[in-house]
Length: 321
Ligand SMILES: Nc1ncnc2c1ncn2[C@@H]1O[C@H](COP(=O)(O)OP(=O)(O)OP(=O)(O)O)[C@@H](O)[C@H]1O
Image (cartoon, rainbow, N blue to C red; front, side, top):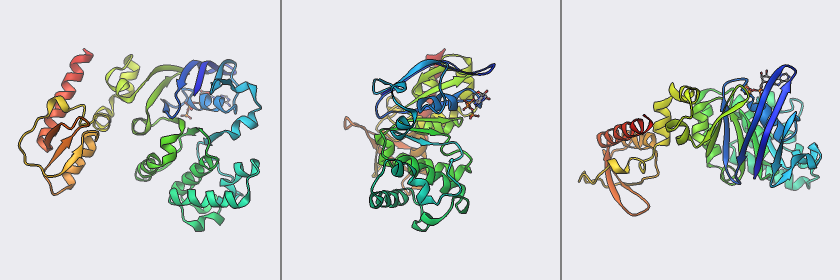
């Protein structure tokens, strides 16, 4: 759906983006990840022509974005700005209604959609008449999301949408956002420097450094098949937490068996290791029966799970060396 070819941007002597190319498929969530200043925001802003490149081209659904006026292009692309970018002198309702007003929507429809979004994003209806400075940081980020979602565009650009929030609020909003049908249906290009967030939300990740693309791949590709030392080191500090999140019981299948643990509760093998450990820890059941899509069954308890995970890690490490 989006093709980025050889994109380059200089700000004076600074080469902010250096021959960046990647593609985003329809419905995909692609996350640009990298250290501060590596060119993520500049790349994102070239997609909706807030910044014009020095070189390179961008196509959306096969059409060169230069073929239309920037303001018309932007009406077709949802955009969540860094630090929310809400207008301080507009109420929540007016902030969310900016694009519908430009698109000359019927006011009743705008109101109805705004209320639907407030509901979905867990914002109180009373916030409609409030100004951004009367809301918490988390609520402001939710309003920023509502503003980007209201026109139901096929493509959504998000620049650190959950930045500047404490960890608990950030995790909560990420989870809620991930559960929204909008998250499932749309093509999303998102910028973050938070590795955990990238692994939580990405189908694929574009890892950047000093204006260049270092590696493009799934979270598993980056973790288990890093292309160079930079890619490996970028994830190293959080490797275990990331593994627990992206390794599923399906991945552990070869190391699991029917242990006659007499487990009564059944769970799906698509669950990740972290969530299954949490389920075991929190539940009254000390074990679970796991079923995969082929109808095969395995038993897990905490010990079986940790042993299988260890075996999986060793196999992956052996593959890398
Ligand atoms: N308008 C500008 N004028 C001059 N230099 C700029 C401008 N915008 C960005 N830069 C520079 O371009 C480089 C890339 O910046 P960019 O904001 O794209 O990085 P980033 O990866 O998004 O960083 P962050 O995560 O901190 O937002 C940086 O060196 C930055 O200082």
